[in-house]
Structure formats: C-alpha cells, structure tokens
Image 1 (tube, rainbow, N blue to C red):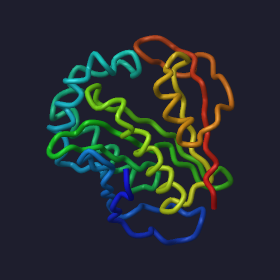
Image 2 (image 1 turned 180 degrees about the horizontal axis):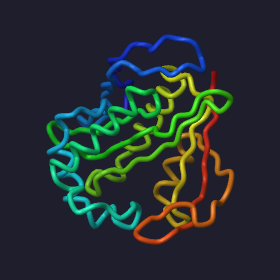
Image 3 (image 1 turned 120 degrees about the vertical axis):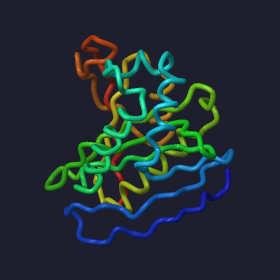
Image 4 (image 1 turned 180 degrees about the vertical axis):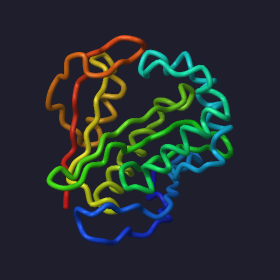
Length: 201
C-alpha cells in the first residue's frame, strides 16, 4: 500500500483534556482519501446512503424518512460537527473523488479515568474487500492515540458480522465480551460482540 500522506498536525494539550484535532486528510490507496466530515458533504452522503440502503439495513438502526435526503444529512452532519467541536466525536469519511464511499467515526469520547471512545464504520458495498476499511481503522486508531490521546477504543459488532470482526482483529482489536440485547438494530434489540484496542502510549 505504501505510506499514506498525512495532512494534519498534532492537537497538543494535556492528556485528559478535551481536544479537537486539526482537519484530517489521509491518502489510503486506490485514490481513496480518509478525511474530516464537512458540511458540504450532505448531498454526497445522502446519495451514498440511498445507494447502500439495502446493504446497510441489517447493521443499522431504523432511520427517519428524511435520513437519505440532503436536508436530513445536513442535520446529521451539524450534530456530528458540534460533537467534534465539543471533543466528544471524531467524524471522518472515505471519499473517492466527489463520491463518499464510507464513514468512520469515534463517538462517545469520554475523558477522566476512562479516556475511551466508541468506533463505528461502514463502506460502500462495491468498495468492500479492498483493505480500505482496514487501512481506515488503523489510521483512526493512530489519530485516537496521537491526536486525541485516548487510552482505548471500543467497537461492537453483530454476532454474525464476520466481515467487521475480521477488520477489527486485523487492526489489533481483542474481543472481550458478549453484550446481550446491546443495540436496537434493524428494529430489534440484538446481541453484540465487543472488541477493544488498548492504544500504545
């Protein structure tokens, strides 16, 4: 894959404080860029969700009717960017030219004694299997350690989501438990396997 080009500086500050990283733009491979979510991404994100609605439906909560519209995505993006400014989220997208082909987000970032965040991600069906999400998870793990100075990140997958579990294991995540009826996914409470990665400091 080669070394990706990185275009962000350190956030600075003391470990344990809320920190917002500078804008992220990282070349992965196959001309795909991992970058910060932007307000102007609303139309492209709405289109990505429409194209992948059937693909994502088994893995996501039921969405409001306007979720796959530009207006709905403007609302979603505004909430995510507000969380980013507050230091509780790091929302990124995978972009191929003007097209958005995936998202990866650290959310629920907690400081104090925990120093942890929750990882979520998805990728366009037609781009799956190329190692792009593995590369993206490795990069967001590095950002979590170096920019956000977190101690750990956690991710949950549906019990039978072998593809996502494979990505996590490749990126150094360890399964540490099973959470019964953990999240309301596809309209019903479903069990999840829980993974974590302790970030080297």
